[in-house]
Length: 331
Image (cartoon, rainbow, N blue to C red; front, side, top):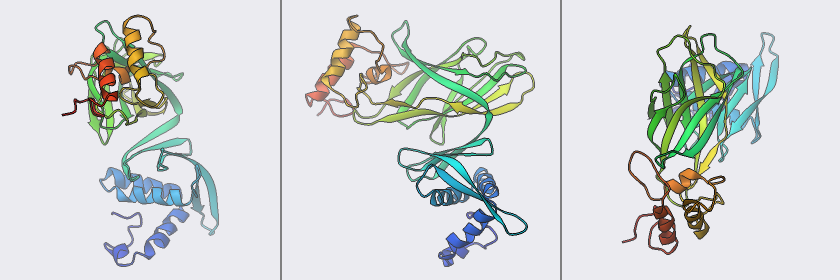
């Protein structure tokens, strides 16, 4: 069960490693899409290696490009090939694959091994927008809203939104969005992702036009030199009336954070401290700031992060060598 080609007995490829590529290639060439389905089925059964092996072959037949080849062998022995679009992360690991109007998304670790799978219907597109602002109490908040031209018969009744983010991107608290999703959702971590789950008790929900689902208060727990990406991985929406689930295709920008980099120029400098001071004095608008980068310098209470003059002071002390890259005082 740890190999795509299970007709070979346990230990076969351990004893004969030279047969691994040739043997599994037979299955890949016979029917690539079925091989993908088999790898995903075994992944959900708790066996992750078959899917990793499939992506190894997909990468091999891509020759380093953004296309790979799917094959089908018909009853007469003819091989039909089709170029398939793949997506990669910043280090080249395959993280998505589009085949037959279905988008397969893979959350992977640093070695390219699959941690989670999300399968989306490309006919149902939803955009996810992140809006950062400072609330009346001074906390930095992110509203997550969705928008789609597709309508659900009974409106939206529930959702599961998954975000890919490093462990150093922390959700401190969550508030509800627009009515009727104004109750705080459930937020947790699973397989390297932030998972947000919300639902309503009504059987007639709102449509997906510019609907705010949740407000989040974050913390960056990284160093002043670490870049932290955040992106939407998957979204499941549920019809409030029928209960039908739709694993939709998500479009969203990939956000990047670096603790202390206020002006988003890629490093922490005295200009970042100056911008905070100017903002607090009312001499510089908030437009163009990375609010979370600013608020996460001096970590406040667990309810959320605020932008204060202490954040500017911590940057100055860091640049003077009095604080380390985590903005802790040097001993």
